[in-house]
Image 1 (cartoon, rainbow, N blue to C red):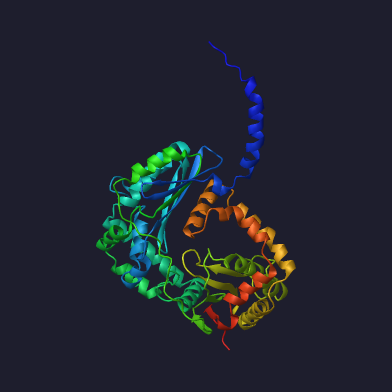
Image 2: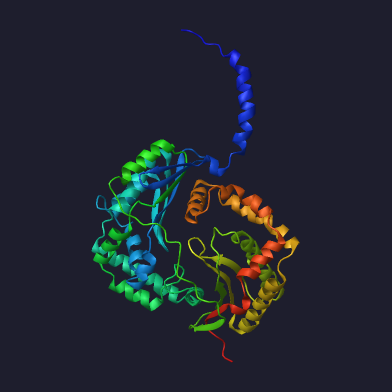
Length: 448
């Protein structure tokens, strides 16, 4: 057998390593993603330990289904999504569950506003089976009458349960006040949803699936030990022959003009009163002002060191918890919210304290010390949110969903470090106005 000597190559290998290793060490998330088309599906594969397992996340857009169903039957998209997990034309739900259990795998679907969310996990060697099941359940759901009846019962119970929850009632009333009815973030009134659930038929479900489901514009993210080329082949084969699907709708109806209002929702036998204060904003997750406004809201109402907690809870002892946040900004313009609760005798004092902290923050802005203290926390949470394969898959999917470049995941730390007090305070004043916010209180009110 002939022996080949490689001694003469060693200097070149050393030079190659010296040049290549620093580049590899600096390679970011976006550089490591392998992106391709599997038929009409946008497929993203990211290598990550442990190589023996994979996490899957995906989005199947439903076009204008949210707005259309609100005008027709708003329960149909939810019921259709629920029935995806109740068996396919090839296997009943027991067989599907047994197969997943035998593999130690997971697969679920959830209908969000405007799209179907997909989550899965399995051993890498079982990924072909997981992809096959995913395609089967999405494209060939059984849609049995008895399963629809059960799904309607479950959905009705969820709606009625939310109707007894003060926090849910306050949130829904606030969202209906600040968003137009056809907006993605506008909830359907409780009684209207109950009527829609009762009237939904199996034909409605089948027609909705036929009209809105399909692989066009779908995104699928796989993180772990998957081989990109083999995965591309599996996904292409699993979804072959299925057409249809609609792009995400990112432009909603014009928002309502912000206008101050106070609403009270009286509920029996509630120990505390839930309070929501907020407004619509002309900001979405991929806007330039999103990051400075996020930092501002973080300082106002995130965690025990936020201004609201430090004052309303720790200093005055008026509540157990209070927070501020931005919501509903992934696809369309969203909102700013303050969420808390008070014992009935402390309601007026608590609301006054909340407004006082909010007004001071809005008028005077944040300080350099506050911004410096928050930057490390924002960066740390961003990094922690990508520690596991499941978290990374979800983060990549969210980035695509929000129409952001994948490089944003890599540049986030430097963009946070570059934030200045002036741009954060400018974002506060540009997008928010406490004098035009809607206040909603829900619970059992103390008699005066």
